[in-house]
Amino acid sequence: KGFLGHVCFNYLPVSPTLVYWKLNSNVVHENRDIIFDGYNSYSETSYYFTARDDIDVAEITCTAHFRGSSIKVVSPQRSLAPLGITASPLGLTTIQNENEILETHCEFYDYPEVEAEVTWVTDVVLEDEEVVYVDENTVRSTIKFRPNSTGLFSLQCSVEYQDKGVILSEVAELKVLEPLSVETSTENLGYGEVATITGKIPLLDDHVEYYWDINGQKIPEHDQERVGDYLTSTIKWPVMQDSIVALVAELHGSLLRKSVFIKAYGIKSISVVGSAEVGGSTELECIVNGETPPTNIILVF
Image 1 (cartoon, rainbow, N blue to C red):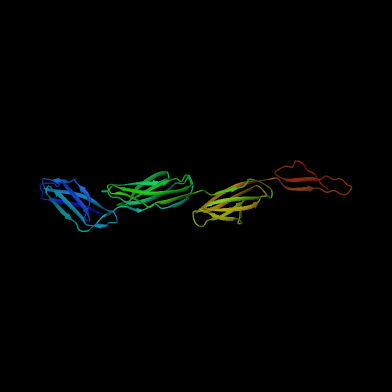
Image 2: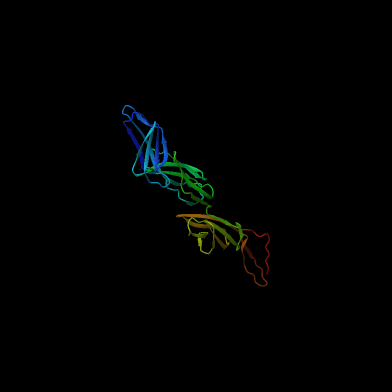
């Protein structure tokens, strides 16, 4: 790919002092590094032309200046070596997870004759970078990073071509959401009191499958509301025993679970065992079922 300008001046006993290279009549390079072979009486110089400003095909002119004279050589229309980024990094929405390493990449043109240096403009901490050729003149730069905090971050690839400027990729957006969470107003309730439990589900897609689980039993009844990038689900449930309340959601093919433990306390029930006849005597037993023992028991007949 590309066109390597190359010209030889035969049968000239002196070397030119300066060579101008033009692209469509515009001077793009001045060359004083000229190879001169006095024995064979010729000079040569070369320059690698690349495409900039959407110019893919152009007329190339080489003008060699000698003392008091000049020689010009004009080529026919030639294809130029393309420069630039061929693949920008892609945006990503993920959940905060310190154990997960993410990656993204960009691809750009690179040639032995045109030195290219890639850097990343980003506000995330990079773990590693790998640069490899994916074909003869295309390079892929892959970065790896760990989303240690939530928020909105940017990723952009920058390629600097020596003597030819800097080209920037499109900016990719990295959105890191809070993980699945569950909370309750209180973790200790009396028997029969109603517990209110709220779950917060990060939305990686427009639709998410989830359910509540109380002591191994699926509970379909719940209220839900979407707020920004999260789905808030609330369940109300009378507490009759110690309970594990869990929210289970499927996110990107993974089943995630978050739970809270609710402790039941107080007197669950009271019963009296025994019977008495009129005029007789008997022994009655008062049975109190609960987590909190009573401080005083009064039998009322």
